[in-house]
Every structure is written in structure tokens, then in C-alpha cells.
Length: 316
Image (cartoon, rainbow, N blue to C red; front, top):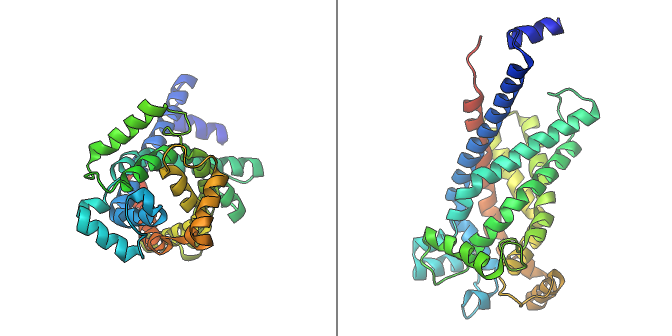
């Protein structure tokens, strides 16, 4: 029966044709992940970018922002940005993550699917078997590691644009930031586009483990539909951010510091603690939570919707 099934699927074609069809299926899978991840990521970013700008500015040192005193909170930060920069000020840095979110989310979800498949293979379970939540967490960790190499340079350009209160918030300015980094420091130098890559890996590996684990646990309990995808995706994003928020503050301080200010991450950590104690590592936490739920709810809901549209096939 198995031989008959294989012959009926490939129509008696030779091995070269079979390989071409398998390659075509894989290419379609990559194209689906790119499209679904790109649309979902762009939707999530555009819907919540102002809150992200507020988060980054609250996390940043007031001297680095060029302001006399630190913002008192999210509303003070938003009011100041609107007064001095207009609405465009809250959308500074939006271009770099929007333009790369397709590749980043495709890498994230594709590596998660691949790690999940490897986990099923080594555990001896079937290709459609549910993973344990521990296995889901490990697959999420692997996806966070893979995507960090895209997220790191992208976020570095983004936060550089967001913390420059004097620029106009135009797309070409982010290109100038990247070009300046490469020209002045090179790609792999401590102050080039790879700055902060290690702390991005340290932040994203556990974060995406919790991200996928919470989403999977939620959808298994409530079922997978538009409402549950939105709510479980939002909850996953909130938990993922809450779990690593102090690391994100440290990453922002490290990434936006001028060359030579910090000699190491340990030096950066001590400097932030000396500035305001442990509470400094939770500046902007409220704005982050307000952003995390709707953004990740939109991402998961849109991703599932677009992917379902692209993978539908007419019944035979």
C-alpha cells in the first residue's frame, strides 16, 4: 500500500522529478513564511510603534537624549514628543523593522517549525504529534537564537533613530545611520551594526521560549481561532517581555551609548544601577506591557490568517 501511495502521488515520475517537487514544496513553504511573517510583522509594528518609541526613550539616559531631566512617565514622554517633534516623532525608527520584519518573522517561525520537526524526530513521535510544552520552549529558544542575528542590527538602527530628538523622522535618515556605522566602524567592530548582538541573543533566546510556550498552551486550551490567536498571542508577548525586561533596558543603554562610554556590559550594568537602583531596569515597563499585548495579538492573528489563506488547496 505504501508503494502504491507513493506511485500515485508522483504519478510514476522519475527520482529527478520527485526531487524537483520536494524542492518546490520547500520553496513554497519559505515563500509562505516570508509573506505571512512580513504582513504580520508590519501590521504589528505600525499599530504600536508610538508605544515602542516611548519605551526606548524612557529606558534611555536623559543626557543621551539631550534633555535636562528624565521623563516622569509615558504620558510626559508622549506629550514632549508631540510638542517638539509632532506625530512623526513617535514613528521615528519605524522603517528599519518594517522593511526587515518579513525576513525576521520568516526566520523566527521557520526556525521554530524546523526545531519542532527535529524534536519530533528525535523523540520518535509522529510528524503531526503535539510537542510537550518543554519541547515547545526549546524550539522557541532555537528560533530566538536564529532571529537575533537579524533583530540585533535592525534594532540598533531603530533605537538610534528613536533617541535622536533632532532628526526629522524620515526613512532615509535610518539608511544614513546604518551607512555611518559601517563607514566609521565596519560591520563587525564593537561599534558597528553588530553592536549589542550578544545581549540580543541573551535576551531573545529565553524570551521566545516563553513566547511560543504560552501561545501553544493557550491555543491548546481554548482552541485555535481568530479570537484565541489574538488573546493567546497577546498574552505570549506580554509574558515574553516581562520575563526579560531588565535585559532589554541594559541592551538599550548599551546600544545607544557613544563609543567609549562603557568598557563592558558589566560596566554598563553598574552604571545603570548607580543611576537609580534596580527600579531603573523597569523604566518604560508600563508602556511595554501596553504595547506587547495588542502588537503580538495582531502578529499571531495576522500570521495564522495569512498562512491559512496561502496554504489552502482545492479539495480533490
